[in-house]
Length: 233
Image 1 (cartoon, rainbow, N blue to C red):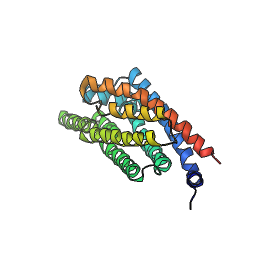
Image 2 (cartoon, helix red, strand yellow; image 1 turned 30 degrees about the vertical axis):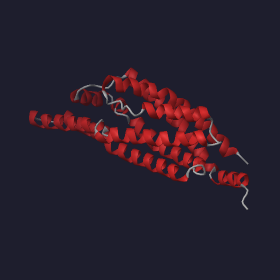
Image 3 (cartoon, rainbow, N blue to C red; image 1 turned 180 degrees about the vertical axis):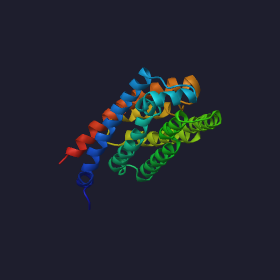
Image 4 (cartoon, one colour; image 1 turned 120 degrees about the vertical axis):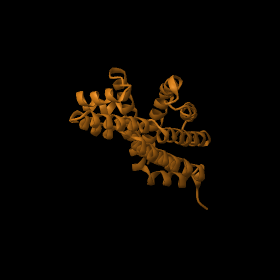
């Protein structure tokens, strides 16, 4: 007969490197998220296509950051975080942890389909060298399409799917003996707030900002636990 305690410790030892990677990824997401907030406060995003084009010509890096360049990195890192969560929590509910991991990966992939930072940079460069009003009009129309894609269906779908994945993981955390109840409840709170995307007008932006508070706490707590699991003998 297999000793469940011994089996659990042996299972953790297999994933020690993944836990450490997950911890580093979680803390990196937290740092990048903080930088993104500062960037948006210091350099608020333009509201028009021509404003974006001018921003990219004035400061390409700020333009890319305003168009969520760091969020692209965050989403990629969250894939590693959820993979480590799957390894830690699969013994408590294999089916739903698999569903949560798949949903998060789908959400990440869908988000990548919505990004338009480098496309807008390219259009801005073309606009700067356009020789006729017709060319400039075409490029402005293309820029408008890029802005619509950037915060359109793919973005909203990815945001909601990621919220569902986080909710599933956090509910399983409540029933686990690995993560604290505070960690689980912070994840649940963050996921529920994420059901209102930032594209839902002023209230959406406000709620998305509020959701960053439990998300930050959640990232810190799971990073600490991952480091503990990664050091466990």
